[in-house]
Length: 113
Image (cartoon, rainbow, N blue to C red; front, side):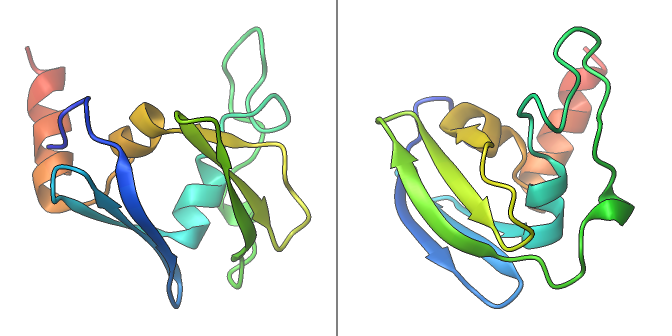
């Protein structure tokens, strides 16, 4: 699992996924559809209830980032090909979404504590 002090040192758009190389030498490969469906902005998640307002089946199969911008030194903003551009992905949130086996298993074991 990625330590909380990790920051991206490289972000690359690839075919179907976003590759993030972390300062800890960990690499995360985020499928575009999963990343878009995980947007936590007020348009995608109800501000008061936390209920998701966008569901994975609503995300186009061919979704991809049209632009990626730094937000200070703590996050990235992704402009998506479906026109959505209000989401900010703080590094800690992005790290928590890492779909690799070791991160997924670490999150699962932490739930059982």
